[in-house]
Length: 314
Ligand code: DP6
Image 1 (spheres, rainbow, N blue to C red):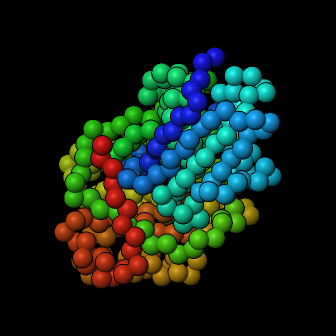
Image 2 (tube, helix red, strand yellow):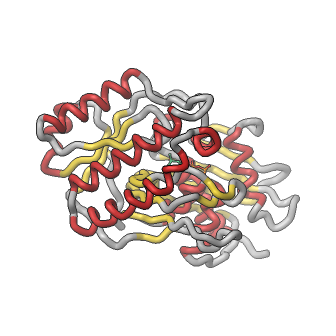
Image 3 (cartoon, rainbow, N blue to C red):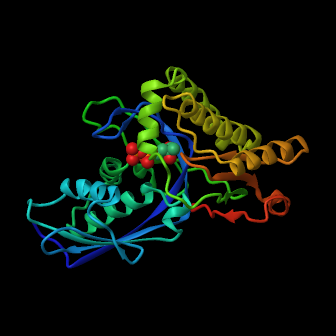
């Protein structure tokens, strides 16, 4: 197999607006439902070279310990593309945002690695194939192949060949996103575990697929018609419903901190006072805010610690 001396690639972080929550196949990361996200300008850059005696992984300038779950997940992904068992990689990966900030997820990491592998072995994979491969590393990574709004279609086939992401052509230049970072500590429970536990034990989970069908219709309509109230309400509702499945799992997964609740309350109050401000959350304590350009200064007054998250439209 031909390969280059070095290959380097970038992929964006994506923030889910309608969440991927639950798998029908854990090995292939096949989801129960479709999901939809927005890609940011920040992300992960990964370079790949041939290594010597074992895979060596560097994250933000530090060697990653082979015992860590990050190392093991990455090696398992590399096993999918290794030309033979004694071929090793040296991988250097860097996030624009600190990994611990709870924004640079595994999504941009596995998408950047997929793109680097494609260049390294000169595979010439199509976007669809790239999305399917990235999905094997982390489900949400299949959406980080594209900028802007991206929809991951769940697919029906057992081999997962119809489960990949596609871009939505609409852009929304007035849309704004920001993050309120409340904790930089590593999560006590991984999102992978939280997802599996919600599916297996939450009495609310059986309703989740129906809810996603409804939310997806509303979100797609809101994007087409630029109906921000519908967009924000649906995104917020979807995120809180996802957290409800975690809260009702056993043992419960509760990522919220006191400060998380404070931020949620402040968003709800601001809305009662007439501000068009909504929130979304991934599986963690940090809160992302959704608002329009016209309200930017008002939102910053309310949340001076707001970290702007610039959306990548192309
Ligand atoms: C809450 O993609 O990290 O961010 O497929 O097990 O790696 P694995 O899960 P992952 O889960 C993401 C969950 C989420 C929602 C989303 O991004 O859609």
